[in-house]
Image 1 (cartoon, rainbow, N blue to C red):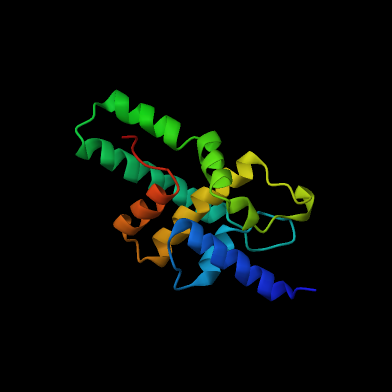
Image 2 (cartoon, rainbow, N blue to C red):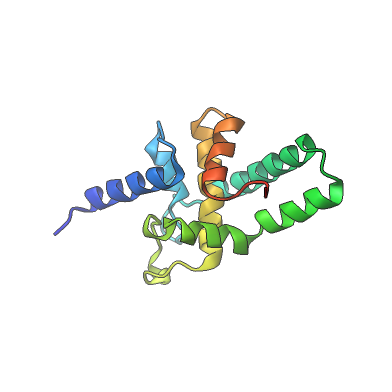
Length: 149
């Protein structure tokens, strides 16, 4: 029988491998991977809000850097920051195995909570890296959340 702390550590380590980023504060990653529960104070909602904003900033900056017209930037932004796309990226990279689901989920991670988790990971990396946008951009690229080539 496995000890819960060991399982938690394994989930965190796997998430770090998936995103190719080592957290200096693993509590930030733990929070990013925690789906909301009514009795659990820690959840990823705040980090998801931050991550959503960071994704927007990075994609818009990249579009401007490339000289893309506003319509193209908006199109890329609407596709690459959409919840369906973020959820797909999270599932395809194996992040569902790292999520700390609430009991109402019954072991199943649905698309919206997965999208929130991906956004929360971006927010957690932003905070943990000392707000280093190049580090966050690299993690986003690892997860497939980047300007299309």
